[in-house]
Image 1 (cartoon, rainbow, N blue to C red):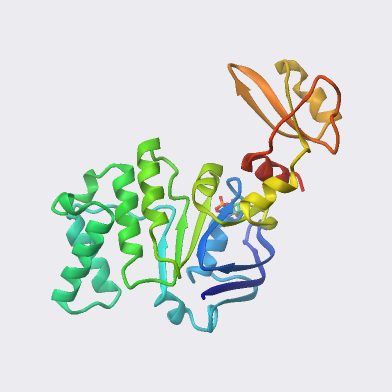
Image 2 (image 1 turned 180 degrees about the vertical axis):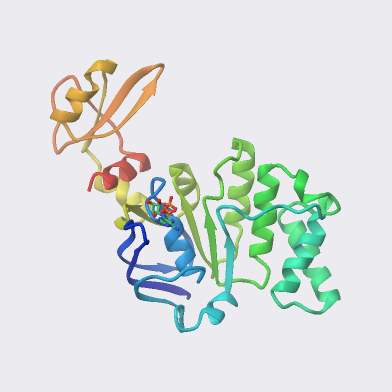
Length: 289
Ligand code: ADP
């Protein structure tokens, strides 16, 4: 079974921002969710693993491949869907995939055509194969992005913020597609959307300010918070005071009124109500670490 091993990765940008701070993590085959707010360092980590940029120090390996010593070896088994999948040229879906397959070294024309048709069917765009990708919806562009990332049967598939900007229907179709990627593939889904991880991932990590602040299975994180999350509906003006007095892990508006979640070993007072913890609570409490 495939294993991606990252050890003590460090990266500080020229402007002084520490984007990777002692990142160590081991990831097995399956769907892995890398969750974190914008600016946490997720893209830096994904781009480093994809050999698009270098870390200042640390080690990274995929099975027997040392990623930093042998970037070509890594690229031959990598599928990558970047946050911004470039510009979409005025060519058809089939032409685009054919071109990407050629770049990945599939030089036989007939083999390429078969592969491209297979991929188009797999991402449900076969009927649209002769349409210009420039006119595709966000969801269709992401599906073409996955199709190109699957060329060459990668062992490691990295998708960076794939559902940002998709409408709920497109997002569900994209989830279905990702959940069908082969079993012995490591899929890393980098996202700031908790739903992405809840829907798809069996393992996860939370990243914040360059550090891994939670690592484990989503349900273990939820279980660890059992009996510790309390909810209260408050007035807007009270929020500051509650943040002073309690460990407020989240506040959201329900019908225009703030509802806070507080982390506590026991009922803070009778005005609070115990609630079943959610993955959102796991995420927000990890950010408090
Ligand atoms: P995320 O993907 O979680 O949003 P990033 O890896 O994009 O996080 O960014 C992590 C931090 O590094 C942010 O503070 C960001 O502003 C900073 N950063 C990212 N890329 C660069 C860069 N090329 N130069 C300087 N700072 C950068």
